[in-house]
Image (cartoon, rainbow, N blue to C red; front, side):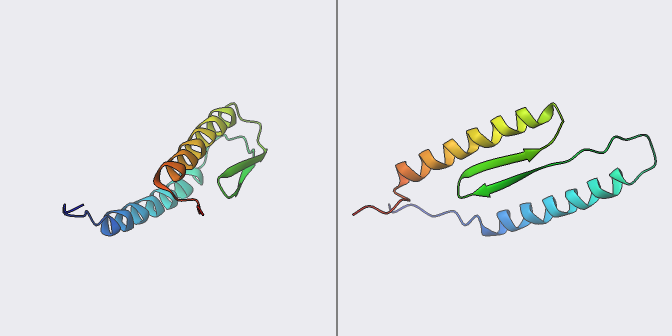
Length: 87
């Protein structure tokens, strides 16, 4: 296509820096004194397939649904764009 291509690299780098600082701010906020309950869980991504473990939070189901939906969209996008090898 003869149109002008958009270079997203600086925007993605800026987004990454913002997310890093947001994560640091959340860590500091979690260290503030107050009543809290400690619970844990995790996520392992094997390719586009998410695997969850642990977690006793009601939000873990919502997180699982969001990640499964995003994984499905990623696979669909790769199929449409020809991201998988075809012979």
